[in-house]
Figure 1 (cartoon, rainbow, N blue to C red):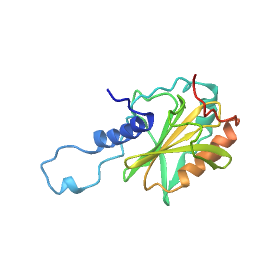
Figure 2 (figure 1 turned 30 degrees about the vertical axis):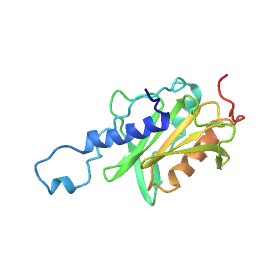
Figure 3 (figure 1 turned 90 degrees about the horizontal axis):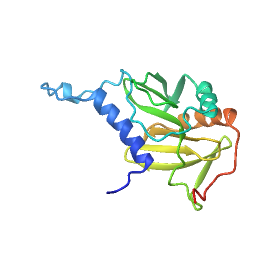
Figure 4 (figure 1 turned 180 degrees about the vertical axis):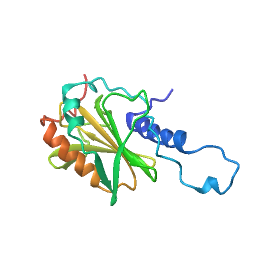
Length: 180
């Protein structure tokens, strides 16, 4: 059996939500060419997030913006379908794939001593691309945070979330060694 990495699981969950809420079998061939309906509550698959209920995640979530600009489009917060996972927030609209943030995740397996980190607004991130989306992991704070963005999202969501992370969570040394 092959282990599935967290980025793949996060990306699959976002993709599955789009399919579940937006696509169906239709008899009308014209209807099949229209964009999926992404206006309902967004279903997110659960992922391991032991620290999702932590004070750090609560501080981060309370500071996040109600809207994000993604590739020139302002995306409002999306309602999450029940049961919504703790520590999760999403932005999007009926015409755009969602941007999803999850706080309190387990340490990303992709974080290694030779990982290429990116500093954005004094926050260290690791980038993991899967299919049509990219998941960025915050790796220098007391909790791990993942931001999954569609490939066409631009840099706006990452910049806005970086500012909130910087202002909400104290920096710490990046742990590239991982568990023993």
